[in-house]
Image (cartoon, rainbow, N blue to C red):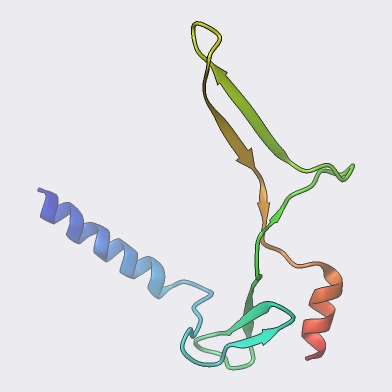
Length: 103
């Protein structure tokens, strides 16, 4: 039963990745500009996808960061852990995108 399930999972992954839109070349065609990695599309040498140097914390419209910290308290009001939740952005600022497009 487990082997059958594993084989089905492999087949599903192959079907999904075979039709994926953004397949890139990792071993060749990479360009590094201002800390941003540009990876060349597998099928079109003129298309690139970016990979930022680091993700950024998302902000609300008023400029404050979007994250949440919760402290769990036990039965005897002792600390017993917590939770940190944050929205992460992988986009690039418009000024950096225009710089990349010029290069």
